[in-house]
Image 1 (cartoon, helix red, strand yellow):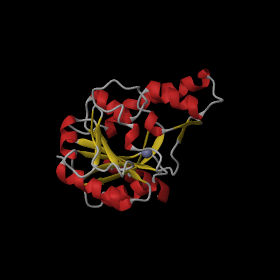
Image 2 (tube, protein in one colour):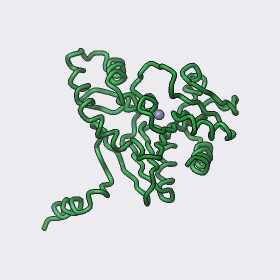
Image 3 (cartoon, helix red, strand yellow):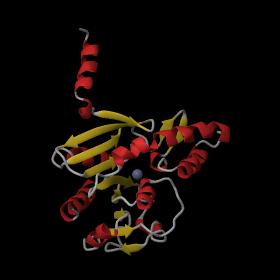
Length: 237
Ligand SMILES: [Zn+2]
């Protein structure tokens, strides 16, 4: 038997341990450790601090993590550039595709949107936490994006570190907000307030009512991000 067919058989025998999966046209590395209703997501390939942190984290913390394999912020779907954190709704994906592919006509963008529509539920089957669970997404920013940009869209805010606006949590569940608001860190709640649908996972989590916590820290600030992830890991159930 040739090595290639042997490997193919091996994957057939253990389908639930596939280390890679392609969802909505985006390749993800899947890291599993024991069993838990925690789900983790790393979706912007250029946010290297978050990738390193989550990769290390999954050696010792139960749950399933999905890490985009690419190294760039945007992905390519049917030849079109797309921010993968804008693919969670058709309207959000359309706005982002138009912005990132200005030369593309509506006729050309339409099939990309149809493709995303067709695969979205499969993607969400992986990223939605099981009952009682939570999905935690790790992001890094480059000292541009900060918590002040989220305040107007938020239902509640708790800013304990006004001098560190780039380091904050964004959550979609009031009970999680109530707990994180007791931490020494910044947190905003976005659940009920009507907001423009930008196609992000946080908007979709708020609409569908599942627990989602987004952890933003400055790129390169590994210890800052680790301390915050450790804090919520210990304090939210
Ligand atoms: Zn990001």
